[in-house]
Image 1 (tube, rainbow, N blue to C red):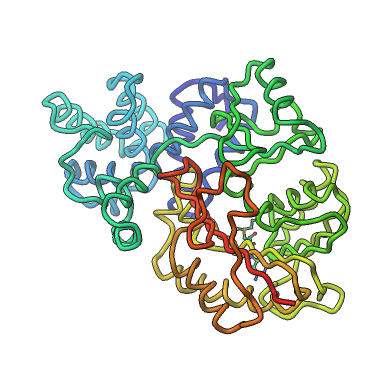
Image 2 (tube, protein in one colour):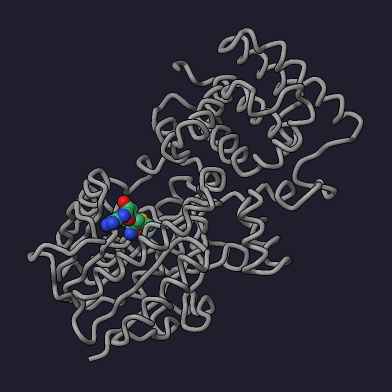
Length: 453
Ligand SMILES: C[S@@+](CC[C@H](N)C(=O)[O-])C[C@H]1O[C@@H](n2cnc3c(N)ncnc32)[C@H](O)[C@@H]1O
């Protein structure tokens, strides 16, 4: 794929990204970032590529619901690249106002001719029949009210709809799913050792970058998606770290003090390790573990770029007993556990199509193992924070309930006392829980435990 500056190729790239996300379980943000950084795209194309990729993933359930009746065979039997080309075209026709319908259809047919010539007639036929239905006012995207069911209306898999209704009730479940389908800003955490939030905001605005202060975290700045992070002023100088706003609140819960020894058991790519190091002004020691070798490299890269030397990253499985040199004791331990990620659907909409409901029990068991394994390395009086970026009860409250039941030397402490004023309302029953529908952030959970003296 070269010479990517015309709109037709942007659509082709979007279809190919969606193809890889669907068939190779690739991450949309990594594939997108590769193209956004390539330097081959003008700004408008970057924006369109981001919109087509995320928009189609967000609304895939609804799009598929409208696509299926237009096909003679099933959607699953359609060539995977063509299936995704049809999806991005339906996204444009049903959800975007600025792109003329004929242009979206013609470009899809041209891409089909160039990539799968035998499918061009099929693509043309399907899209023309949709255009006829649209002309009769039979179909429309986001504003459609008479959808057959919630799964299609809110574009979530049925098992997730069922869960959200069970956890949150009908009204909140609808609000959550709607929030999950909103466009999300790119959020960064200002490295306060290098600049204040106001200084960075002023610098970026002077450079013509639309940046706003976040509301939940005092260190957050929100930017429009589609910007290339590495091209932002201050990236190489370590003025900021990409980190979602709710995620930024976790290090405050840990509440580290200068000179402490801290274990970050699941640390890659280092968002929270680097935040912890900044909060202790790089004076102390942070042992950052992760099972991903590439992840460990990324922790080290981020620490270096941010000018931090107190972080020691190692490739270690934290669910197993730790080697003697890593076995503490620690003043504080953070378990930012591997989880189903269902709180992050705004920024990772592919997760709802890639996850299997059975993943939840498997992850909850792993989370419990990691928590149990590392808790023994905490000093009496020390603090243990458990966090996830998901909203399932099994991976959150139940993991903590089971842990506390089996470890009576630990007690749950009130998370609100440790959070900035702007985030205290996110604590209920001592648990921290950020909700997309209420807080305009990713969904997050955290519990702050103390080991009694
Ligand atoms: C939610 S992510 C961590 C995000 C990180 N704390 C941050 O703020 O940037 C969970 C991490 O756990 C790692 N992981 C999974 N199983 C693990 C294990 N048994 N021991 C240590 N890390 C593990 C994954 O590789 C992943 O990087």
